[in-house]
Length: 189
Image (cartoon, rainbow, N blue to C red; front, side, top):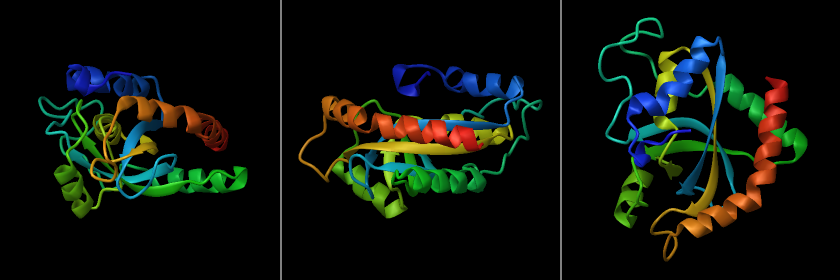
């Protein structure tokens, strides 16, 4: 997986999605680690929608007509049917799955407390540095999408300081539930 914050151009960040579509895939599961605005560390959150605050759009430039229209509809970028299946599966296997809006930023620094307050006002439940470009390209390509965020820390302003070690530690704590959920959802799809 390629990230924009690593200095990769959007074409490279989203290239795997284009390859999946070219190979005949009909749907995509995207995952990420995110800071919690509406949820605390250890939460798994199905993404219902996103807010693009990256300052970028991977569709800028000549349209790839073979993949989709010049102005794709983003109303259902995160497929309701896939979310319903994820919630049903999570309940069946005893894993708590919340739902919310993901806000994507370019990174690589964590956000300021003022930015988080602004994002909260905008309706964001989680913030992270990935996912949005890939989902824009997936929507452009007509792919169904299930997005799930692992909330690994409270966003800035909700705790005294942020550090990457804490994110890694929480990720280790919830990874088994996360893997079990993804595998179980794939079995249903």
